[in-house]
Length: 277
Image 1 (cartoon, rainbow, N blue to C red):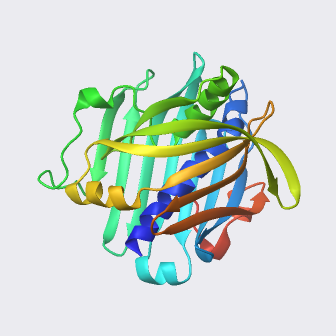
Image 2 (image 1 turned 30 degrees about the vertical axis):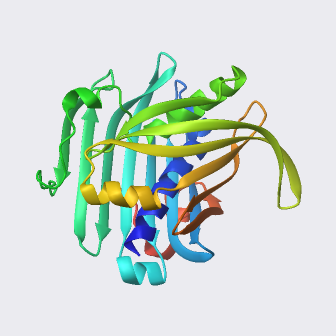
């Protein structure tokens, strides 16, 4: 179940951030944007394993995840993540990142703050990792890295520009307070797919990840066996929004489906999930 939990969490955070990239970019105007909330159900090989609430308001994005059913009984997993950012000189710049999660083995939180140029000024992991088990990431390697949410807001803009320029690949670094990764985006090409009896002109994009620094020996071993490949189908138009997405790994397939769209998180909260604030 821990393996399923880890892959499902990576999948839904990646998918949500890219799906909301267009909204976040549109909100970079001179006035605050209204809050919009979306409730998603996450399925693992056809079984409902988690619920997620995602909200975007002005220059921040919140993601709340709560395991469901047998997954909740076994893992007791839940998480709350908030990323704030600015859009400066044509690119997303992280301002802060906070993530707290609960699981059977205990709680952990990560708090990162950045200066106006997106350089880390402070970071706290509580409880801290054991240095003999998890090697620290050197400061110079963190320069230019995005946080785990902002990286995919930025990626959506890169994807659109790369496709228009007929380029088929780019990559971006991401640092989550403990580990440094590089996310690879491969633009496969234009296709026509059918979703719920409707045909769509789309651009197929495959996303994968390489471990760079800060990973334990166990994580590196598991990654070779379990690391998911995520496939997106973006609308081939001026909006370039995801039509369909799924993640595949040797241990199963994850799918996320929209359950409800709400005007506030209070109206879009299943099973007593609490707000981030």
